[in-house]
Length: 205
Image 1: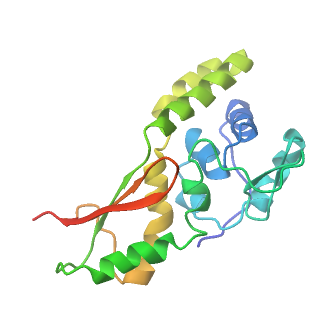
Image 2: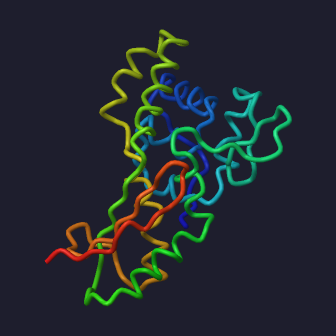
């Protein structure tokens, strides 16, 4: 995984404030970044967000984070909270054995192929949750309303972030590169509760 500079460069105070407010609403760092439109892939492939979050901890007194930047309540909760914007899919996808499972599916298929295309399906309700959080913040902070209203065109879909994070894992373990125009599809769907289901491995000729 890529580890670069541990500092976010915001386009302005509205973007910074929105980032903090999204985190306060039980969002993982990856979802907060994608909602406000950060397109730097390395940010989503980071294995720890501890240093990245240090400048913002004073603004988030009700929350605490573990070394990887996953959310813990500072008010007595025993374990981590799942991000309400991705239900843990983006939050933990690179810390489980999902990459190994997907690579194994690719290696075991009988299709002749030299690459693959990754297709991902997220639960539809997560899109509604995403817009609800943005709307909630805009009501609480009217000064952010115009900025948040324009975010719709900047938000990065969760399934795109999943591909950015997981493609290197799958490539390394399967020996097959991702091809955006590939004809061999590895299809992955997430349902509610957020359990992973390998929907299909299919070939389009």
